[in-house]
Each structure stands twice: as C-alpha cells, then as structure tokens.
Image 1 (cartoon, rainbow, N blue to C red):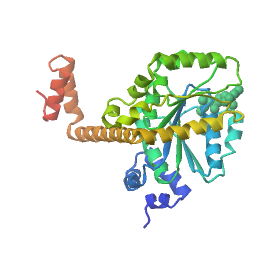
Image 2: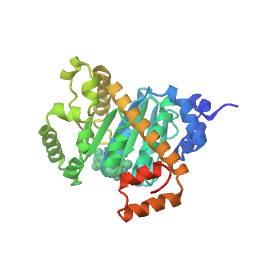
Image 3: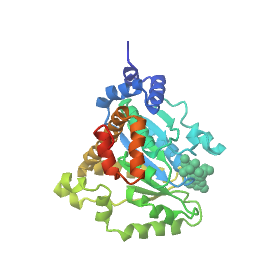
Image 4: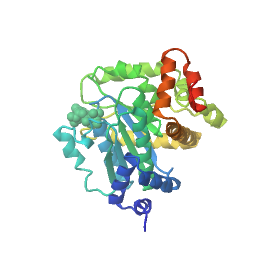
Length: 333
Ligand SMILES: Nc1nc2c(ncn2[C@@H]2O[C@H](COP(=O)(O)OP(=O)(O)O)[C@@H](O)[C@H]2O)c(=O)[nH]1
Ligand SMILES: [Mg+2]
C-alpha cells in the first residue's frame, strides 16, 4: 500500500489536505507521515507575515502569492490569523480577491484552527510548514496575528519575517512595545494610500534608529550568531528595509518581493540561513522532547499520587522542587 506521505510527495492535493488534517490533530498517522517526509524538507523559503489585525496582512499575502506565481514558483499559505479571510471571517472584498488564487494548482492555502495553547499552535504550524516544504512548495507564507509571544514563536519558524504596519490604527507604539520590530527583517507600511503614512513611517524609522543596527540584528539570534557566523560576514549586516505598499491595488508588491528575495540571499551569504535552520530545529527538538517526557511522566505517576504531593506543596511541607523529586522517585514523602 502506498503511504499518505508518498502520495503527498507525488503532488496529490487531496492527500495533502488529508495529511494536514492528520497533522493538525496530531494523530499517529500524521506523525508517521511527518517522519517519512522530514528528509524531504529544508528547501522552502519560509516567510512570516505578522502585524495587528486590519493592517492588510491577508491582502499582502494574496498579492505576494500572485507575484511569486507569475515567476512560476509554487506557493503555500498557512493562515494562523483567526480573523483571516482565508478562514472566512472577511469582508466580501477579500473573498473576491482570494478567487485570484483559487483554482491555481500552484497555490495551496490552509487556515489553522486556533488552539488552546500558544505552544500547541506554534508546533502545529511548524508541522504544517514541514508538510508544505516536503510537498515541494518553494515559497511558504505564514500569516499570524496575536499579542506578543504567539507572534514571536511563530516568527521563529520563518527565515524572513515581515512586520506589517498601517497608518491610522494608533497601534504603532503598541506594536513596538511588544517587541515586534525586533523580529522584523522587513517592515511593511501598508495602506500607503491612507493619510498619516508619513507619520507612521517616521515613528518606525526613529524606533529603528534607537537601536544600533548591529545590536538589533544580532539580538534576534541570541548566542548562535557569534558562534557560527563567518567573520567576514560581520560587516555584512542586514538593516530591515521599510517598504510602502498598497495591497488593494498591488503597489509596492514587486519591490516588497524583491526585498524578500534579497533577504533570502543575504541569509545564505552570511551563513545565517543555516543558523536559523539549526535554531529552529533545535527548538522543535526541545519542544518534542518536553512533551514526550511529560507524557512519560504522566503515564507513570497517577493522578492520586500527583494530588497527594500537590497537597504537601500547598501545605508548605514540600517545596516545588522537592515535590518533583518525590514524584520522580515514585512516591511522595
Ligand atoms: N485603503 C487600503 N485598504 C487596504 C489596503 N490593504 C488592505 N486593505 C483593506 O483593509 C482591510 C483589512 O485587510 P486584511 O488583509 O484582511 O488585513 P489583516 O487583518 O491584517 O489580514 C480590508 O478591508 C482590506 O481590503 C491598502 O493598502 N489600502
Ligand atoms: Mg488576515
């Protein structure tokens, strides 16, 4: 019998849709397929698109997809935004524009159900992106919205992160506070047809100038950067460009796509592509290890045992770390 993974590798869209559901539900079949597909991953350019609701992320993703399709690239979209038009929560105009893409077999769009836990969503998104990658989609866009950590977690999946701002939302400072600019590789000022675009740009530029470019770029990657980056690349720093767009009529899209391609080239030249891949896979490995160990632990320790120890923590008889010790050694004090 041919496995689901093999059918997906052959380019069967129906099998792909079925597998994505298995993966989202974290079934045994889904996990087995992910294992089988893993050697086929690592080829796609993963692009995160994040920003406050209503800034135009879905519209931009739609336009970028059309752009990359014209270049003959296969494009997949994972929409994690629960209010996204891809999930049906859109005004009519958006749905109409999505029709530009429907029926095109070089495009695959998947909306993610929102999950209880942020970690779960990030992990499910990572798995779905892996399936797209193995299935041969060269450009994978991940649209996310959220407050702080979920955006950051999902952005960690991407090679290139676009942070979308728009004038007139009054959320510029909010977004910057949330550290969103720190994850930006490219800043998009969408709705450039709206009044106030200069002010939005000015605010963003001054926020960007506050940090030394070196620090800004390097802080994003933590300790990996200095350890793996070739010395000659240190002068070759990526300064996030600021691109104006009007997603509703496609203005600035070619330039934005150009920035994305250039960022991909920069990542390869600087060695940062491999750095990001390694960091991404490492956090995936850690997350998997954590959940497996947790499950193992739960299967060994009964609820009753756990509650008894928990009671002792509550009574201040055991400290949390003594409680863990007691649980790992099999029996409470
Ligand atoms: N005026 C103007 N409206 C836009 C632009 N881009 C998107 N919109 C509109 O803004 C609304 C929100 O867009 P959407 O792409 O759903 O934003 P998202 O919530 O960030 O995904 C929709 O009504 C779009 O048609 C733009 O460049 N200019
Ligand atoms: Mg959206």
